[in-house]
Image (cartoon, rainbow, N blue to C red; front, side, top):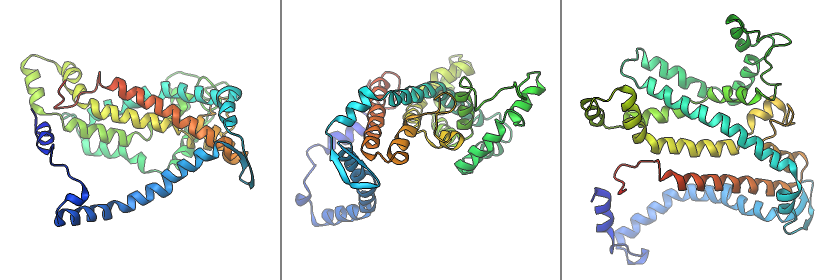
Length: 326
């Protein structure tokens, strides 16, 4: 039995209600409630209450300019989302397609860079760590505008760099990263890689928490570097990998700023950038159809919740927690 199990076993039978606590314990509990009250109030005002209000909006048909003319429509908005609006399902397909492409690239890149920056044989580690994290300090809008020029088909650095290796990337017939439906998701992935400094930092913290005696035991058994990476490092950091996966999925379901700044939310090219949040924004604010927009928002939430539940259900087969009884 580990320390946490012993603590839980010792604490059983000692849990008491608030009024059965001693005077000192009640005073301590009151101070605890006092210090967390700003967060509780903020959560209620800016998250919980708006969520409940948006759920109520989903059964009404009204516009922002004429809120007093709202009419109750029941589940008509939901029927429209699920069965009558092909744009919503197209937006979901676009979002999931981009997730399938960008999510593995982003997570693997962040992990491998963290392994590199954590290597004891790397010279100038502090400098490289700073350089990889520095882009996260650049405002997102500014970074997107910078990348719009980097990906420019005529004068962009990326196409000019490919020209140096013999590819005809620049020019009229060159690679049009932001105009070609087959390249747009790769371009968006490049922009996403610009800001993986936070993920690298989290992975580095996990790598530095791996017990060194496990590596020493693996070396004694004759395991090489790649074998130690696969059999020791990765299993020990799977909780952090799982955390980054959940955060990335939630972020992709809310993917909005990049396609809005670069393409104005019109789905160009050929509808490949009409993500779920673009669909929600246009319905709720551009068309001022707040009732239907709230329904789309809840649809996004439900899809994200289903994916998250699936990941938690399958995580127990590959995520290793130290001290787990399995």
